[in-house]
Length: 96
Image (cartoon, one colour):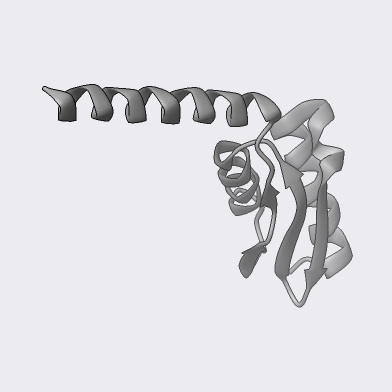
């Protein structure tokens, strides 16, 4: 059975393998075999990938994934554009 320190190192290595240079944004804490992930990623796919990386580490008892997802400003612009298109389409359909 691995110690918490050994698990933390193994999880950090698996995150480095999964994310490459982006892994430092993800914090890892381990207590009694329970891994807590924290930090900030760009989308939910990255958040799920981090949890998947931890699942590949032998000896992890549970995962607490509190990584926050911060969408880039590009998403906000796309969302606004899409929202405006939907509203305009609804308006023109309602007029007909």
